[in-house]
Amino acid sequence: MRPITHIVVHCSASPNGRAVSAQEIDAWHRQRGFRRRAPVGQPHLPHIGYHYVIDVDGTVTEGRSLGEIGAHVAGSNARSIGICLIGINRYTPAQWQALQQLHEDLARDYPAAQWLGHRDFSPDQNGDGVIEPWEFIKTCPGFNVAEWIAAGHRPHSQNVLEAS
Ligand SMILES: [Zn+2]
Image (cartoon, rainbow, N blue to C red; front, top):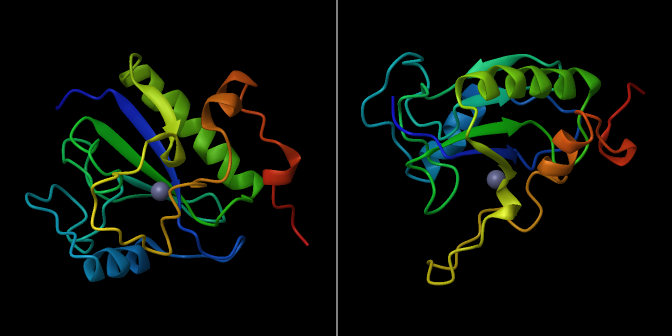
């Protein structure tokens, strides 16, 4: 296993409450040129950059295995794990519950890793200038991850999507 210093929470930047499968994310990441170099598990997802996807019903799908370097945060992939919440800034109670469970499980295995949102990473000032619409690094994942943990896994009401 590689050393892990950060666990990074993302959003899919798709409409809140609309299901998106890991397979669809894999297709998006194929278009961006991502490719797993030495896949371990999930051979039907050869491009996906994240390690976990949390769909609107709370289902957690594994993407890259934890030993694989992801493709989700420029400059910080080597020592991080990437988690993608489906939506853009409002997540279902099932998604919050699943994220809490992942936090508890991964905190046990990687107690020194710092949890952050994608937006907490500085953008690459020397990058190619292409900002993909599903990334929106300035806001992704639409809430403050450290605050959510400090609040005992209690999200702000504005970030909760209740059933309509
Ligand atoms: Zn992101």
